[in-house]
Amino acid sequence: MSTTLKHMASLVCTNITSGTRARFTTADLRSSLVVLSAPPGNTGNILVGDSNVSTTRQMVCLAPGDSFVLDLSEQKKQFALNEFYADAATTNDDATLTYFEQ
Image (cartoon, rainbow, N blue to C red; front, side, top):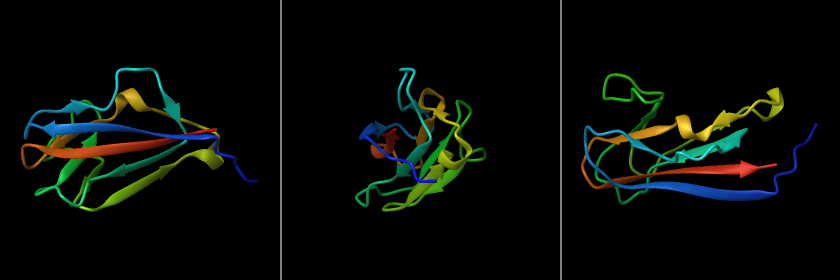
């Protein structure tokens, strides 16, 4: 079964302070397909996870230029985007969460 995606949007955490969690959004947005990425211009890793994300607790660690795909479309479930947080190993690095609406 194929899924038609109607819209793509991005949420960006900019100039993250190292050791301080940044929330991608407080809005009640949901998506079954999410792409997490760290721009190639970053100088350190980006840690992504829930509200407890840290250097010792993260869902994914992204090096500069890396991306990671989370896909629940076949399970017909969705991620709550307001539950995603980022932390940076280096202050002033950025993180992007791209999501797709169906």
